[in-house]
Length: 487
Image 1 (spheres, rainbow, N blue to C red):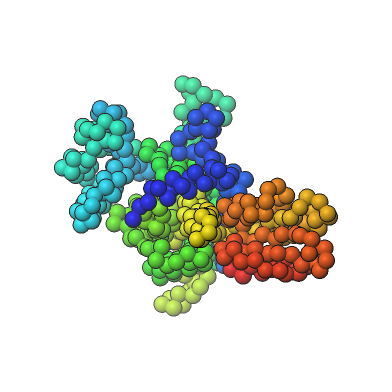
Image 2: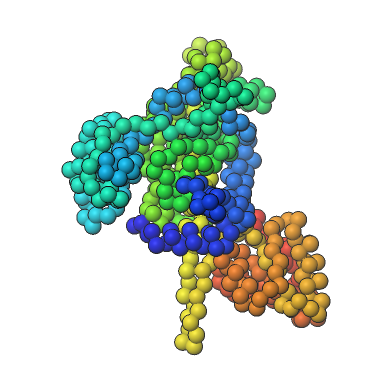
């Protein structure tokens, strides 16, 4: 069940505590574009590094690259994006507001109290989208009296396709003769992997099956961009293309479905927060596809896609470039007793949105807790991040700004900061500092007090339970390192 109130609370919390800001906010912002603040950038980096390690370090047959955003424009012709990368749109004639058809219908279905009716409408929509039946989609909207949120009327244009790629000019020449200088901001990172297939395979001496991973920016001119960082015009993807022998795609598709779900569950999230959603309408390059959906405050939505892309991409790039993009397989074919020879590999893709993963982690971590007792009302907002993803791992808090306590705290800071992200603070009461660290998701706080000078012990406080205990000052670093590495 969608909970827009929770989403609004998360958005407000992200701004107040330095996680995510509206881009260009002092100029009233830029729609569907966001900046990551000091703690959001750390969280995003930690997620990115965890994914990268899980792909390139934990799999011996997967390597990573970093391809450029700008690519030759023929790349997007070969990939099918110029002709096929479109969404069905509809305009309200009175308000002039443009809607993505599936978002308009899904939004209406969410308002219905009759769950069966809502499901029936969504099933009809999926079938019509799969058949590219634009007249049927308009009829579905009109027959259910779906209104524009601004004009409150049902005066709709016909449904039509809208290409989502951003165009720009490349080089110094512009104007009437600049058609040859048109390039696109990439709408996905995958094509940079495909055009480098042979470069990586030969220089890395890679043997099929093998994968190429990449993390990078992508851009889509979303007409209806909404729901915070879930759908943005500039976003970051973590993609891996796994090259396999033709005919083995079904088993590898199932393998990567299982493997990627294990990765999600390693984040400490309950399995009931996830589900697989099989695509009814397949993309032009796929013979199988599904999404891993997470139960966001806005309902179950896609966070990762797994696609069996066949040989579409390499075959088309071979055709458009005139360069052979084939793999020579030395394995012996048992039917001929000779090497299998050249073929164009098939591909299984895993593609996860980094920004959506940030939103997923924030949604899972954000909690409002009532700590009231009979004597006193109390509450806290806490971000219960997995320890290894938390932006700050350890807060070091001298009880007072005098008596040598800051010096001991600084020594501990210097000992730990090379190994993990630390935070030092002297201001305010210790209780206020604890609450601030809870709101930032810091799993450990260490307080340096006068007893520390006597017996070299400190108070360590645990974020999730708020339990405090005395431990040796010399044990602090190892205690935090053990928690970080124990995932």
